[in-house]
Length: 120
Image (spheres, rainbow, N blue to C red):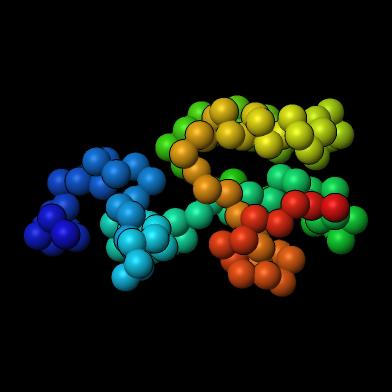
């Protein structure tokens, strides 16, 4: 994109901290490219699924850094995991911390990965 070799990239990825958006032929956001890595345009969020994941035996999750206040995001996950925050409050808290992120969790529910599925 910037016509630079990966060994001499001059850290141009700083210009797009969450990656450069890649669109489908229908101009819908599809991927984000950051350096040599391509990831989903959507931000997978399993915060609403924490109680079910805990019942399945999941003891920890990895939070992938995004261009937002990640310490506050970690506290939202901790508060939900510890039962101090309800579903509606966590949606509002994450939306306030990362307002332009389209969240999804469909893959966990056997749906299309881009689909947001409300946890039971």
